[in-house]
Image (cartoon, rainbow, N blue to C red; front, side, top):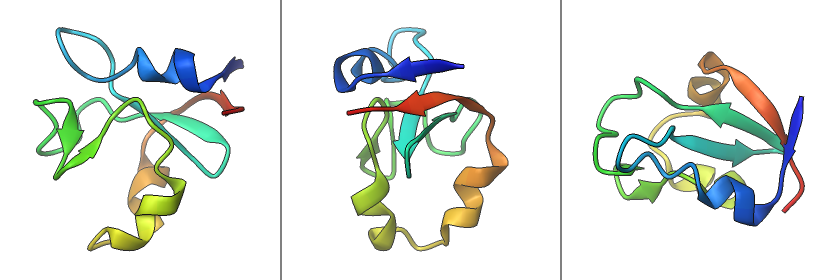
Length: 76
């Protein structure tokens, strides 16, 4: 499994055909197909970042992210 740095993860911003990845609790998830994600973010939360600290702002629990495939680990 690939280990992503902050710089590597940033390349997966969901824009211009790039995959939308996010890190959460040390794992990297492929968010392809997530609703409201066509502009490089999901309701203002950009792809290509570690969203661990931002999950508390979400109107849903972290169980939603666990529905997406893990593609690597994150070492910011």
